[in-house]
Length: 424
Image 1 (cartoon, rainbow, N blue to C red):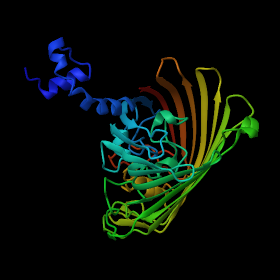
Image 2: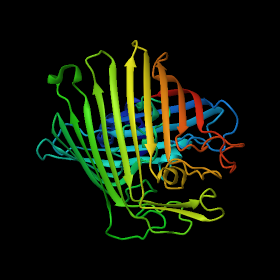
Image 3: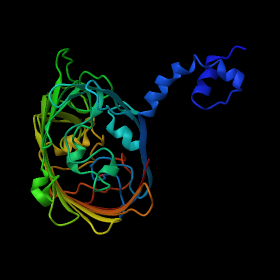
Image 4: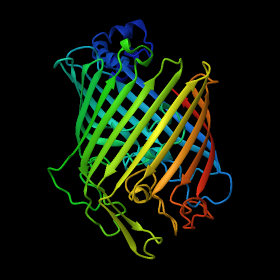
């Protein structure tokens, strides 16, 4: 009796039992399946489901504080994102290879992928036996710079900082990583764009396409050795990105300047058990953003050109018990480009237009988060956050919902949130 290849494959994978007489006929087919089984055995599947409930005391949500993923979540329950990551890590051989495919869904995912949804990451890993081993990633991979991750579960707080909000999130290109020693790791890459755009985009919208022009990204990591005692494992990060700028909302299709991004960050372990500090500094210079801002020029296009924005943040984390952790963050962001960079449709997470009368060049924010690990594989936390527009003018609130165009009527925004994430 002839046995179809599909049947042979099911039997070889252990999904179908055959009578002895028929099983004998599959002897030559099974070895063809073994390489596939071997490859699958090294593949891992992981991910998470991220949800939240948010309350903003008072009325009016037309102008929420413009940090990443905040818009539209006020006064209600939210599905934030679902993420599935399929990966095969490099093994210990000299010429090892692997891959990562990460798919993200939901409003937060749509905000970080630059129009590439659902693909967040998709790259091939290759190792070369040079020195301690040189690793390459070709494809689309997460941004190197920044203290915080696009994955909320990896951050000390539920909400994101302003520094994260104007950083890129992914790049498409070639990245090299070399671990000089346990204390020093170098990363450098070439990418299509310095900002996060759709898959295989060659230029920011409105900017001229130059065939040979690419962006560069980099990060240096220093890690404290065991000999540092209570400070062992602490890390210092310094990175620099450079590439073609973004012309923003592109109402007039203006040409963007080249863009510089600098980042310095640190995670500091201490001799005090379970007490950790962190710090970050983000600085961006030279970009064009254009949008309709009735505050600056009623019914006309306002332009920001060759300006800067920077953000500093401090973090503290203290693990009170095995299950209970208290995290805090204080931050300050400023610069004549802050309003345009956060509010304009700049390929960044918000894509909001400011309401009439909005001025937003300086902001102070304080965040406190209490995390309690009650269920297995679940991150559960409550958070309170206060944002203050330090320019002296109202920047938040306003009658109606996001996008209604109502004028802001508050200098301060208070937010209370509950965040529940299941990781698998």
